[in-house]
Amino acid sequence: MRCPRRHFLRLVAGAAALSAAPRLARAQAYPTRPITIIVPFAAGGGTDIVTRTLAEQMRGSLGQPVIVENVAGAAGSIGVGRAVRAAADGYTLIVGTITTHALIGALYSLPFDLVDDFAPVAQLGSEPLLIVGKKGLPADRLDELLTWLKSNPDKASVGIAGVGAIGHVTGISFQKITGTRFQSVPYRGNGPALQDLIAGQIDLMIEPSSNFLSYVRAGTLKAFAVAAKSRLPTASTIPTTEEAGLPGFYASLWYGMWAPKGTPTPIVSRLNGAVVEALAPSQVRSRLAELGLEIAPSEQQTPQALEALQQAEIAKWWPIIKAANIKAE
Image (tube, rainbow, N blue to C red):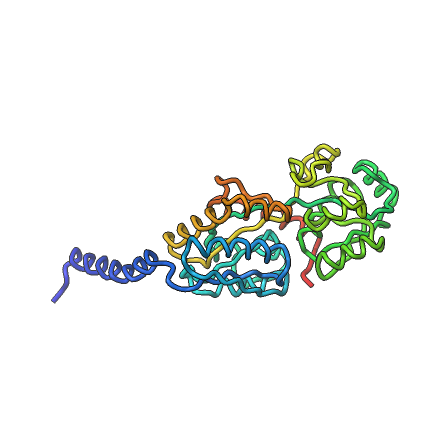
């Protein structure tokens, strides 16, 4: 007996609705157990501190424990891979940066897509990069620094936190824009590079501002400019690159939260609401401001804004990385 086409379509639609019902019910009940947030870097760094601050606040609004798991290695790509393979049920998330969700795509041959294989949850904030030099450097302003660099091509040394890291690619962009040339010296993180900068073993660094502010205030390092459109609230005497004579040169380390691709929209919305609520208290904003982090404006704390930022940064930095033929270590 043949089944009429109209009847057949009703059966198919009914079956689809039945299969979707359990997912909808789970999404409405979410969360019912602890949530894990992957940090793709070692404990104690900026991403780890930001995530733990966020997790503590989210625990209250979600009514479940929020556990932070550090999965470091390969510029964060190991942790990102772990998040991609997780179930799309809202119980495994990742907090990443420009490095893990933009730059590594040009450095590694990844078995996943940094945009298409994730569901953006929320943009968290950003921290501008700061151009600093050792105390004995024969320059006090950015224009003087540029004059010195041009007079000494390939002689200055700039510490970077790793090949392909944001400080490295920003340094390449800096040389192209200013017509200067210097040597990039790779380290295993900002800590060892900073020690050598303070000791005068290297000349410069261009890295997130929170690494340097206490040393600039103490007079141990020289600050030339912050690579942002506005001055740092916590260091208002440091000029912007625009004010210092290098207009349009901006770079920052930004943070975002993602879930695996396919995470139900109601769960993403619930998580976004929890993040927005977690970032609102004054004590949280003060804590993150102490780290040099500027929380994203409320209208930018959306999944759509995070995806737009991610795609814009990929379009900006991938050509620079590939033109410089930077290879992952």
